Image (tube, rainbow, N blue to C red; front, side, top):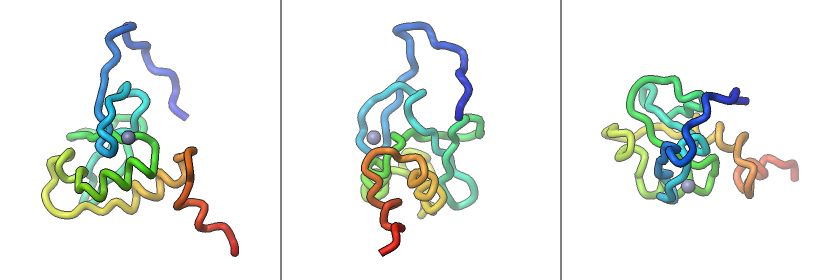
Length: 107
Ligand SMILES: [Zn+2]
């Protein structure tokens, strides 16, 4: 889990828009994404260089963004980006309705 970073000044929290649902939220509550190679990878520590995009820790937002092709736009990356790494990361992190992760349950 992330250690508590320095507290931002109250009222001056950096805000970002989720690339999925477009809702603005505190940067700290969103997952940073960056391009690595030909794929999108999560950057929970926000340490990777380069352009980042922000997404709620939610497969719903991920699906929205993917369907809209919001990732290449937000990340200024032309062409198709693999979202497999991000998808599997989210399926372990998403604590809301875990539609995708739960499909692994044995029948
Ligand atoms: Zn969202």
